[in-house]
Amino acid sequence: MPCLRPRRSAIIVAALFAAGVGVRLLGLPLRGTPDVSDFRVWTYAAATLGTTHVYRRSDGPDSPPLMFHDYLSTVDYPPMALYELTVAGRAYRALDATFQHGRRFRIAIKLLAVLGSCLVSAVVAAALLRHAAPRGAARSSLAFWLNPATILHDAFLGYIGALCAAPAIAALAVAVDGPAWAAGALLAMACLTKPQGLLVAPSVAVALRRRGSARLLVASFAALAAAAVCVWPFVRAGTFVDMCYALKYLVTDGTLSANGANLWWIVTYVAQTAHRLSSTTVVDALNDPVEILSIRRFLLLSGYEPSRLLAYAVRAFSWTMVLAVAGWATRQARRASDLARLAALGALVVHAYSVLAVQVHENHVYLAIPLLTVAAASRPPYGRLLACVSAIAGLNLFLFYGFGDAAGTIVDRTWTFIDATVWVAVANCAVFAWHVAVFRRACEDPVADERPYRPSTSGSSTRLACPGA
Image 1 (spheres, rainbow, N blue to C red):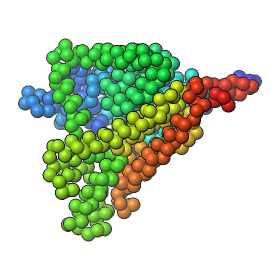
Image 2: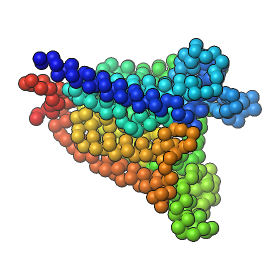
Image 3: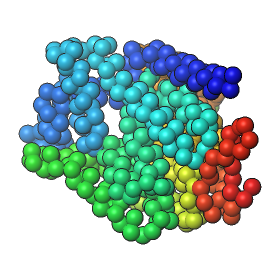
Image 4: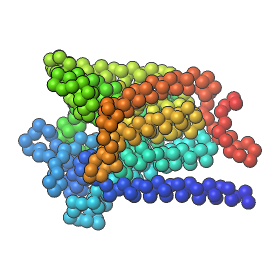
C-alpha cells in the first residue's frame, strides 16, 4: 500500500500536464501576434537560403528585406534564435516542401514556442530536485506549465521567450553546484537567443563568485567560446557585418515604451493626454487609448527640441535606473548561495528592466515568471509575487492582442475610462516596489547565507528543511 500514494501523485501530475497540453492545442491554430508573421518569414528564409544569409543591412540598397508570399520582414533577433527557427523550418519543409501560406506553417512556428515552455518546465523541475522535495519540484514545474500568462505567451500569441528562459534558468541552476564552463555556455546561449537573457547574468555571477573567483573566470571564457562558435558560421559566410547592422536595432529602437505596461507607458499617456487637451475636451483626452510614442516625439510634445543628444539622455536615464537597481540587488544578494534567492535576484533584475527601461515590449517581463516560480518553491512570499507578476504579464498581453485571433482584442481598453493598460502599468510599478521590499527582507535572512536549502526526509513524509530550523 505505501507505493499507492506516489503512483497516485504521478497520475495527477501527468493529468495536469496533459490538461496544459490540451489548452495549448486550442491556441496553436490562432494567428498570434505580428511577431508570428515575422517568424514565418525568417523561418522560410533560413530554411531555403540558409541561416547565415538572412540578416539584412537596413541602409543597404543591395539588402532587400526578406519575403514570404506578400509579407516583408527584416531579422532583428540574435543568431541562436535563427538556428532554432531553422530547425523548425527544415522539419516543416520535410512535410510541405512548397511552404504553403496557411495555418499549418503557423502551427509549426508556434509549436516551437510550446516546446520551449515544455523545456522550461523540465528545467525548473530538474533545478528544484536538488533544492526542494520532489513533490515541490513537480508542483513548481506545473505552476509554470499551467500559468495562464505562459499559456497565452507561447501557444496563443506565439512568442519564443521560452527558448531564452530555458538556458537562462539552466545556467543559474548549474552555477549553484555544477561545472562553471557549462553555466557560462548556457548563459551565452540564452543571450544569443534573446538579449533579455543577459538579465540573469548577475545571479549567475554571484553563484559562481561564492564558489571561487576562478570559476567565474572559467565561465566567462566558456561564454565567449560559445558565442564564438555561434557567430563563426556568419563570419565564414561573410555575413557577420550584415548581422551587426541588423542587430543594432536592439539598441537604437527609438520607442518610449513598445506596448510595455511600465513607467514609460504612464509617461506616454501623460504626454499624449496633455497634447490632446489643446484640441479636445478633458474627458475625451483622458479617455483616448494610448499609442506607442517615439522618444523624439515625446520630447517634441514636452516642448523640447527633439535632438539626438536628448534622445540618448532619456535612454541613459532609464538604463541608469535599471543598473542602479541591479547593482543594489546584486550587492544585497552577494552572500546568497541558495537557488531560491539567486532566482529571486534574477527575477528582480528582469522586473526592474521591464518597469524602468525604455523600448520595453509587452512580453519582456516573461523571464521573471520562471525565476519567481523557482524562488516561490521555498519562499512563500514569492508565491504571492508570482501571482501578481503573472497577472500583470497576462493582462499586458491580453489587452493588446487578446487570444491572438484575427479580431484582435475582445475587450475595449477604454471601458475603465482611462485606458486599462495604463492601470496595468500603475499596478506594475506598485508591484515592483513591493518586489523590492520582499527581496530586501529575503536578503536579510542570516540563516540562509550558510548553505542552500536541502530536502529533509525525516519520518514518513518529505518536507523542505531550512538550515538551523
